[in-house]
Image (tube, rainbow over all chains, first blue to last red; front, side, top):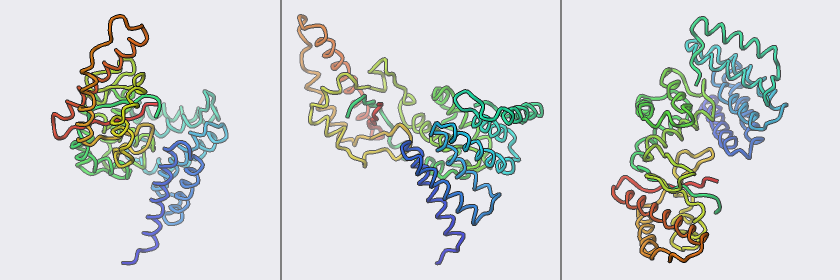
Length: 143
Length: 215
């Protein structure tokens, strides 16, 4: 039975994600991991749209590879991608405020590189959001 | 091979039972009830809290709190790999895969370091631990720093048989020099530990030995 265009695109995105996961976990093929995660993201964007929650995983893979590179530039790029991931998570995790708080915390971590803040103003905004969430009981648990 | 080899007892039948759950975790989608049951069993284990200062238990708690969520939406690759590795440790290895680098021999582990070179000179040891090839690799965890290799039961029996003559050799004479004496004592201690692990693994059909390189 012939596959639809979307089914083919889904299979391709899944394959690219799996290959990116292996490249990143390997630790020595981070550039490959970034390329594969980027291709997976582009594939999903093309057939699922800019706001689909499935875009979160290739973004997470891309961020993880950048973090492993331990460069200020790649850390900044990871934070930029982290902003996009958080925007998607705000929708996907609307019913799970504890997890959304974890995501805000993760983005704060992305703005920290070698004990320095890459963007102190933005880090403060995120800290305030986390505090506001704690006041309304949606800060989640530190794990 | 250099560095250290960690050898532990694994319940391979249990591993085969939880393997579908590990595959499902790796797919990072929504988990089915059977996989959630596996996670609940791990969360109830006293060993869960001991892994990475409670981080593993924290991840289990987060996943179990939101059965409606796909893992890919809120976890990272590292989180998922940590959960998979933690589940294998807690559910499949004796004593939660606990070991120590300070004590080379424990109730459920042996770390071969200083005497590894001596063992590597033994053909049967090399064949058992080095020539298993990739087919002896445990399917999970398949990523990350730790990769386990599993011995076939006939290799565990060969290990036990190979160790026997070493253990029957008399201890070094009292006049033996300090360093040589110390090495011989450590090697004997580790051989005794290995023999105990092999005997334990051979005592039940579901058990065997798993090994991994620590460095």
